[in-house]
Image (cartoon, rainbow over all chains, first blue to last red; front, top):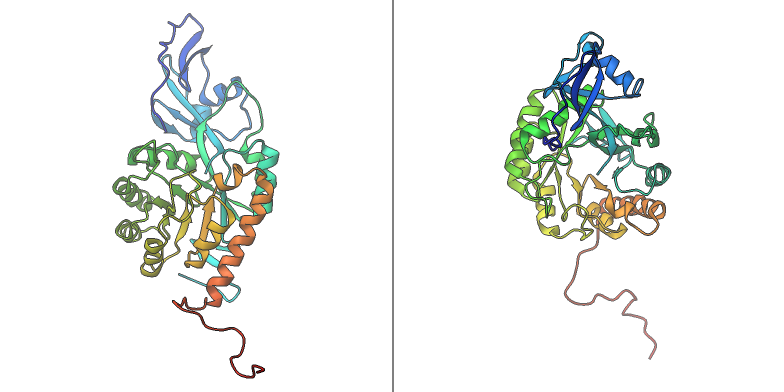
Length: 83
Length: 260
């Protein structure tokens, strides 16, 4: 899997938001989100998604208790068709 | 290798009746994917791991796969290093689908030939980490032996480049691998049409894996059925034991009793 992200420096966070890089793109999300909260926020609640946070796998059991930090880089992956 | 009276075969904790494994890429739609898998009779299908499409809420390939009948085989397609492949396998494990994984460490983007050395190293690490590793590898006996030595329960040598449809380019080497590797040999990559699948099975392969050969046929669902029949025919042909080839003729009708 390619580990290069689309360059696009995250904009500096304003109060009450976090500047994250998600799947290579800069995104601003509300501050205080956990990984689980982010998954819901992105409309992926209930979908089977694996999460890497700053290049380390974030196990599903930790999603509800892991707070996101300004500048975090996340990869959200799932299965797609392939040979 | 365990074989059974009903010609089913085992891999890890699984017993398979079907000797065709299909990929899920390149289909025109999820409906076509679903129909092709069903027509093929495959009991195991490959999938890839990629970023979630955050823009679209569309159903994914998992919606096309009946997991009560078909085992998911995540692949590490797109990985060019052992580390990338190992990382991908851990993500597959995190997604809860890691019963078996198809290991691919590619050496070159134009040919998609495997980096055999990196594949062996990745396999060594993954096996130690409890994965059941089905490695896509070159049609090279020594690589296959090394993969078995590091604990892979099977090998998956290519017949021709991925997506090339060139068929069984080196049957002599594949036959050697099948004869010398005492574990399932699954021919993976290069099968372009049904007769290719039959040839692979007649060489003695345990199973055949194809994706593009079905997905890029003009009528994929019909080709999936053809592949299923070809794998069955090739297997029966192998078990029946073909006649020897001869340089000269050997009459089929009696030479005696000819009228004069």
